[in-house]
Length: 411
Ligand code: AMP
Image 1 (cartoon, rainbow, N blue to C red):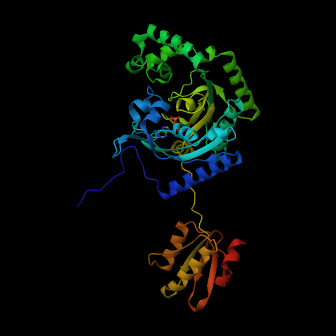
Image 2: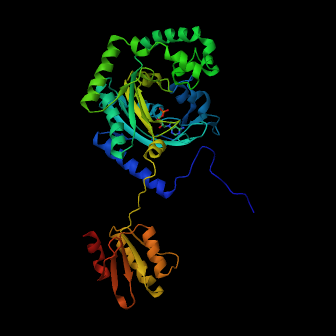
Image 3: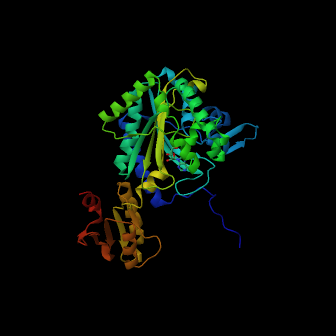
């Protein structure tokens, strides 16, 4: 016998019950985005590799070791998108969106790819939804995008979520701070993990994220970026906090917050769920005022976030959703099958969710099948042209004319 195939490591199949939960999440997100005027964009699954090298940053883990990069037949280097912001900024520049009314408010959903070590909540192909407000440096934009993800989490009822908020300041303040941080790290170099030590020069901020005990000890005494903010950055941050409170969004300030992408400036935020273990972040983002210019566009401030669909579903846990059939047509005699086929087709045209047995089951078997399908009613076709409609919840049964079924179910 030939060998069987399995999905590749770090990927998964979405089966119907899971798909229904995803659909509910996406519907909720679409509604929230729509109510705030965010328009959907879809960019390709792959882009030029250089877009991510320049956009996400060469010193990040994503670019250093997690990209699925390949050459096409013309020898161009392409990469399966590891994140959504750089592609959206590429599209903003390419389509001259700076000429549109600002800010341009965009949202997206789709698959992303990172060659990470697979574990619960961390995959190599995963799905994100996200929103970006491009073209405004106002703290109002920060707060609007944060309320979108906050609303989504609330509407879905994700339990145990905390919003952590920080600010990275703008690039100048950060440069001064980074020198301070590097000298702090160099002074205690022998206490650091090998990985952090190797990156003191290229990415010292990541040391805040380290699991390594010695490193954590060193970092607990490290200087904080929040103490280095310029007056303008500090004022911006104060306004973000005050508008968040006005929008009734609760947050905690986290002076050690950092993110794994190089492009952030000023506001950064992270939504963390205490029901998840190692991979506790369900979504996060921040302001990226320099990115569009770095990608060849005009200087354009922007802010946005991405949330992991799988993480949200994990945090929501096992909530069973029925697929909600309106009706299951049962035939009391196999001779009635043709009539059932015609009726099912007609009822579906009327917009009812209707199923019938496709496997030659007995009457008892058909009722079982109706139960499994979560049908609210069954319609039993009987010899001689009569039919009965049964309410599956109460068990009440009445004789009906199949013509009247649509109206009866709707009422
Ligand atoms: P990031 O683009 O790194 O800021 O991540 C945004 C969100 O995407 C995270 O908060 C996670 O919910 C989700 N995410 C990132 N990487 C993965 C992954 N490898 N597997 C599943 N979800 C992920």
